[in-house]
Figure 1 (tube, helix red, strand yellow):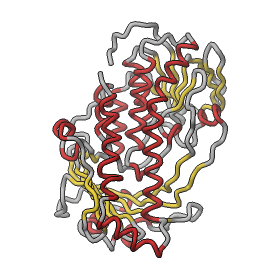
Figure 2: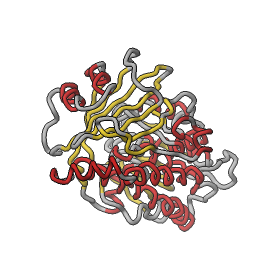
Figure 3: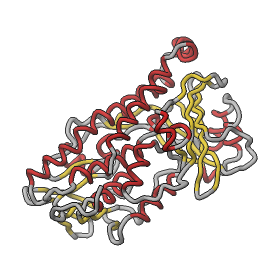
Figure 4: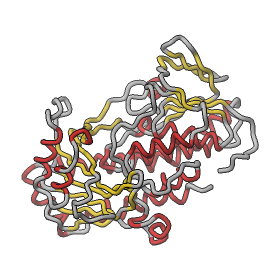
Length: 403
């Protein structure tokens, strides 16, 4: 994407300072527009630590000027039973592996370092914090944001990158219900250097009702591991009083190194979140406003692709608006439609797959669990679903992200 694209500069407001918002701002800046991110909190801060990134968002980050050198540990991903039987290997094309490293470029960083590198790439003054938007209006001429402190901001285009509880989404399309997956994850990370576990791997293991997984990470020059355990839960129930103790209990049925990783993790490096998403939207854009990231397509961590899809969204928004006169409503509408139409099949596939995998592994009737596991252990079903189909779908996006 060239910084010397001809065409008038437009004014774009981005609501939300997460990966979707920062990527959108970086991409629009490259496209030659003036862009401002409005973040409601005192800083753009990550919601958690653990993170996985596939080649398409990595490529997009590089094209947007983000330093991705030594950002995370390249990993080969395998699905295994709790007893270690390999059920599926996630395979990428040889040329992708050659360019992006072991496993085809899946890397294990920690989320705070991604935020730091994206923030470092933003031009000065783009990010404004402590900005609580209460109301949004648009007409043929532009979009107006009304803030809690009584100020207003006018823009030609607004991108709602404000998460699963998006004000922008609600403004455009009204309330849509949250879909509870009735699952929660407890996760953590450690830099203990005497674990003696496999390196360069992401191992996703399942028992009858619990997932226990880990992956190599690299964070600011240090090698380590991140891990997570996942089980069914009542989303209205209180969190376990001791997350570390609950993770230790759930991890006992799994092979080394998972129990040792949990044991060597400091309690302050353990977190929990409940898995949920929202229903699909047939349309993201209306007039001069569109959506990106979780505001458009919140997905569960079972996809391992939420942050990655958000970054891709931002890149594609910048490409769609490159060279567009943002004062021309008809041109803006065409550009925003050109952004969202190719994205919807891809992200809807990821959201659907993440939800269905969560149901398969954690909400199957107890009498069917042994049959399910026999299928996973002795047929190519899981290889086809997660080992072959998903990387093929992800790598389609890689070919679309070009300079």
